[in-house]
Length: 427
Ligand code: SF4
Image 1 (cartoon, helix red, strand yellow):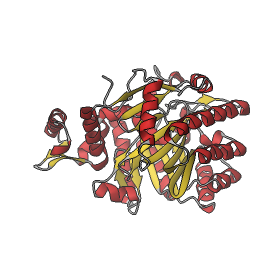
Image 2 (tube, protein in one colour):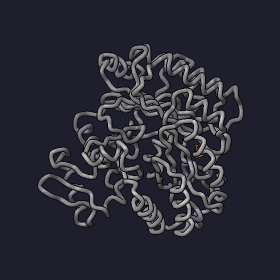
Image 3 (cartoon, protein in one colour):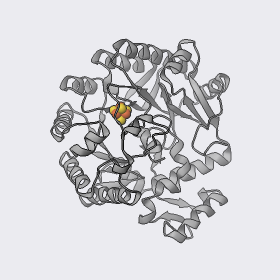
Image 4 (cartoon, protein in one colour):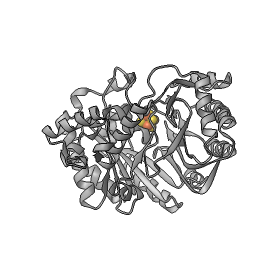
C-alpha cells in the first residue's frame, strides 16, 4: 500500500479516472478548486525541488498551452462545462515565465471551461526576477487577487550559493508595484536550511522581509537530496547548516514573525491576525489540500499540467511528471495520469485525522483509528503531544516537528508549486 496521502505508484486506468470525473458530474454542488502547473523556468535554481523545464522557446510554451487546453476540455466534457470555481491557483515552475499574450491565453482557456465568480479566490506564483510592471498589471487585470513571490533568502552569499541572486531593492519594488496595481494579498516564500545561512544572516533576511509587510509568509525547509535532484550536487553539503542549526533558524523565524503579530499556521505559514486562516485554526476549522491551507472543508482539487495531483472524492490521482509524456498522452486524447488510488474508508479516516492534526494542532480521540491514536499518544513521552480526555494536543515543542508527526501527509503533493512545496521540501 502506498503511504496514506500519496496517490501511490499504482497505475490508475483511464476508465477509473473517467468514473471519478463522472462521479463529480453527479455532484453539482461540490466546491471545486483548480490547480494549474506551469512547468517552465528561464534558469534552474540550484536548490530547486520542483518539476520544471528550462526553456527559452515561446513555441514550446505555446505547445504546452495547446495541450493544457485539450486536457481541460477532456475533463470538462466529463464533469460538465462552466462549473464554478472556489479557488484557482497557478503555480510552477514560473507562471510568469509566460509572455503577456500567453498569460492572457491561459486565463481565456480557464474561463472557457470553468466559471470564476466574484467570490472565487484567484492566486498565482511569480518569480520577482522575471516580473515587470506591465506584467503585474496584466496579471491583476486578468483577475488574480493574491500573488506570491519567492524570496528564499536575501543574503548575497546564500543567493550566490543557490544560484538565485535578487536584491532586496528589487523585491521591494516588486512588492510595491503589486500593491499599487491592486493585489489584495502578497505572500513571500522563504527557505531555511540553505548553504551559508547563519543566525545573524538569516535574522537580517527576516527583518528585511518584515519591512516589506507581506500579508503571508511561508517558511519552507530545504531538503538536500542530489540523488533525486542532480542539480543540487552544485551545493556543497559542507556549507549546509546542521540539523540542529537548521531547527534554530526556523525557531528564529517563528519568534521573529510571531513577536510582531503574525500568527503561525500549520507547519510553516505565518499570517496576519485578521487572516481567515488564523480564524479557522483558532476554531478548529482549518483544512488543507494539494493546493494548501483552506477554510473550505470539502474542496475537490482538479490539477492540470504535468505532475499535478488531483483530489476528487476519495481518489488521489497524479498526472505524468514528464512534460513530453504528459503532452504526448493529452495529444493522443488520453487523460495524462500516471498513478492514483481510491482511499478506502480506513485510509480516508486516517488521512482526515492527520490533516486535522496538522492544521488544528489537536485531534479528538474519536477522530483517529485506535492504532494511529496510540502511536501519536506515544509521542507524549517525548513531550511532543499532551493527552487529555478530549484528545491530544500538539505541544509548542511538538509543533517544530509536526511534519514528522504527520509524515504520511507530506507525500500528498507531487508537483512543486509554492502551495504544494510543503509536502515535497519537508521530505
Ligand atoms: S526554484 Fe522555482 S524558479 Fe527556481 S528553478 Fe525551481 S521552480 Fe524555477
